[in-house]
Amino acid sequence: MVDPSPRPVHRAGNRAGPLSASGTGHFLAESRDLTQSLDLLVPERTTPALIMSLLLHFILLTTLGIIWSSEPSGTGDEADRPVGIAIVHQLPDRQRYVDARDLKVQEKKSTQSQQQSQSSSASAAAPPADLSPPIDLAGILNAMESTPSPVSGTGLAGETELGDDAFGSGDDKKSDSQGDQATTMVFGVSGSGSRFVYVFDRSDSMNGHNGRPLRVAKAELIRSLKTLSEQQRFQIIFYNDKAKPFQLSGAPLQLVAGEPSMITMAQRYVESIAAFGGTEHDVALKLALRMSPDVIFFLTDARIPRLSGTELAEIRRRAQQSGTTIHAIEFGPEPGAPQDSFLRDLAAQNQGEYKYIDVRNLGVQSTTREATP
Image (cartoon, rainbow, N blue to C red; front, side):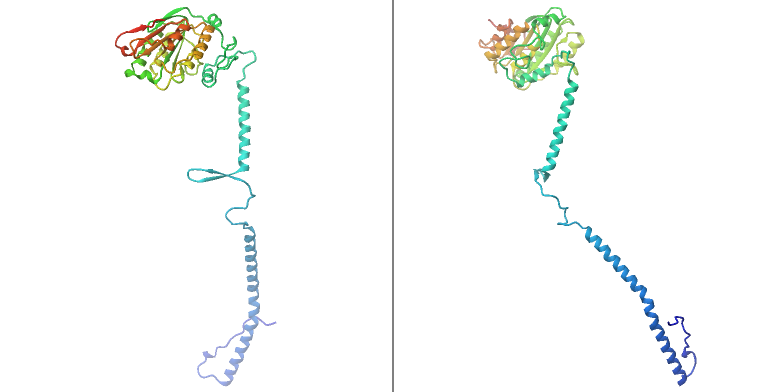
């Protein structure tokens, strides 16, 4: 064991003068001893450093191994996924890929949600077994526009017989009406009863002659409404290729009482009407007949399209069921009424009056001509 304590070193340069032979020998001997001491000390001092170096290298290699094992396999862009079918949606600016399996799951969830919603709606909307529901005239109108007339029926759109529990008959209409009889007129054509429906054309042809046909028709309708009292009931249907009844916000579509406040609201409705579109007479007339009125005032300037013989016969059958009289007023650009007008037949088949009006004189003077039967 070598003593690690340092030995004193004598520096020969501290003494002046040349070194003696004995002094030189002594100095060399001490130098050798010092060198041997340093050689023995070096291995003891480098052993901890070597151990530390090995430890650091081990930690470094272990860390690199962990990092390497955690890297995903594959291309490095995305994790590997099972092979499946992708559906491509071509969008304006890109393509969108959807996994077919995910799409099937979404469709299944959507179908289940719709079924649950429909079931809940049906349960909530189901009335009590002993309740007779009111007439949904708005729904009837949509059904009439989209459903052809069947050979027979049970109260749905286009039926050939109306059940008493569905829409009532002319006799039922008379019994539940509390109104008094009254007489009102449209362009000199008078009608008597307690329930009135005005069916007026609002197609684009009513804009002719600087808009006078529609403007004068609306003014005449308002004058007729103002002759009614709260004892009478009325409804207004303007139509082109679709029917547009007078309906209060949040209220069902029905005949309304002729009280002053209702007449005022009806007047505002009439004044707001504009003319546009084509013409479809049949739907508007059948909707009016659903209300079982005493009188229908029907006004149009459209000779085309004509009501066919089958349509006229169906209207006549329904009018007879409800006890309704139909008056027809025709606007035209000639001085005299045409002999082949379907409106003449419509009025004659339903105990009504036919009136022809020359639109060239509308607003200038009262020139109405009653056609000969």
